[in-house]
Image (tube, rainbow, N blue to C red; front, top):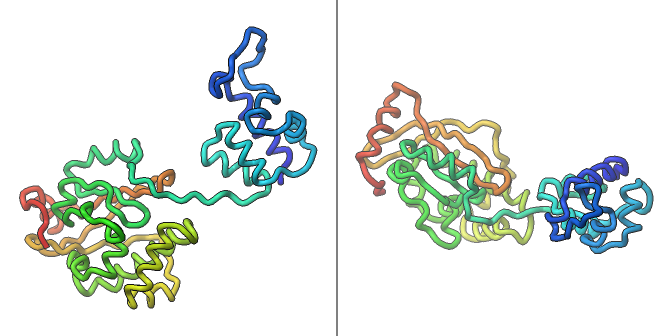
Length: 277
């Protein structure tokens, strides 16, 4: 626990809040714009004396429950809440992501990519949005339901899902997907949707179970991918990924080296129509 930093952080957040931010009247005698200590204490459900001693760097170490109450009362963001817990000497609380809503910032970038194969995916491999060219390149991946919404699940349970890549590339893709799912499981933990997906795959796919037992981890660099299109043949593409850590979603943008055969094939996607395997 860092008493000085904890006290300074709480004081700064208290002084940054206005009474109207938390539904309190400002009143004619208020000389400062921030909240009083006793007001914060009331919002957090603790005594003014207890809160005051924390800001004065004395008293007992706050428990996780007290820190959670402080985070709620001071209207802290998830990132600020994590910072508060670290200052208080406690591990940060695990946050599990499961929202299919694409964040506004990610959506604005996505909407500018109409002439590019791009898609937004969750950290479990669920396709949330695709540009028309992404549908033409890889098919509509948003139509699946249940566990099959996840590319990770389809890869190991549905042979047709592998037809998008040349057969000789299948071992590499399988290992990459298993490593990606292990990363999601490590962050989300037991009882999460990632854990449910892992359990389902361990029961359904001996191949996945074998790779999972090797504890693969994602690499730092993603090699170019080869995508097999039924009309255009094989395209060698680079996949640039923009990660939105706030919602654990990814924007994948597929490009080809200018002047290459794959670049010319990408330009033909707009006239090929939706992919048919």
